[in-house]
Length: 245
Ligand code: IPE
Ligand code: IPE
Ligand code: MG
Image 1 (cartoon, protein in one colour):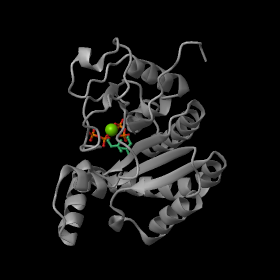
Image 2 (tube, rainbow, N blue to C red):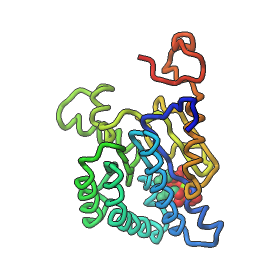
Image 3 (cartoon, rainbow, N blue to C red):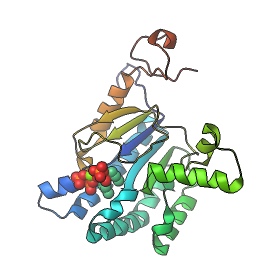
């Protein structure tokens, strides 16, 4: 690392998009792109741990992805089950604590058990928190949080909703990356990304490597995060982006 201090985001969120196009370009089935996407995620998790990112939240399957061809949906379910079986020992040895975020009710019993086991096995790890958003949607999250509060008869405030959200165990993301070139959120962290710095890259997810992540982080380091204040109030020259107290 260079002598200039790198500003490492505490929490990075990623819309891992572009697997299908990566495969199609190579005349491969789309599922081959998703497999390659798991490799890219493994490398990304490792790099985040190495450089001191504390939380990584990735979008793996959206509430809307059920609308894809049945073959692709079942391929993604199988891939999740396979990845669970294969990756957990590695995560364990790297000090990664995994959480699955999303509506589990639509998943098979076998997959649900796999999620619970992976979470239990890695529960003691503290180096990096990995949130895998699967059958997740930002609107689902806000609705389930509101429903929880209504059931308990609690008033709905920003703070109470925040505590009832599926990502209440981590602070909001500092940097939100989307690979694959689309300039949209696609129902990802609608509530939590209120003040995230956004970074879009045309690079397809299977090709998003450690160097590409470093580029995104360097870009983040040049942002000035004002949280509604003026530049003068933030009181630091552009190029610093720590949250104002
Ligand atoms: C993202 O890649 C992964 C999932 C949505 C599961 P895509 O499958 O959306 O890839 P493109 O956008 O079609 O290239
Ligand atoms: C977003 O990608 C969801 C995931 C990466 C899991 P999509 O490829 O589903 O997004 P849209 O449909 O193009 O907006
Ligand atoms: Mg896509």
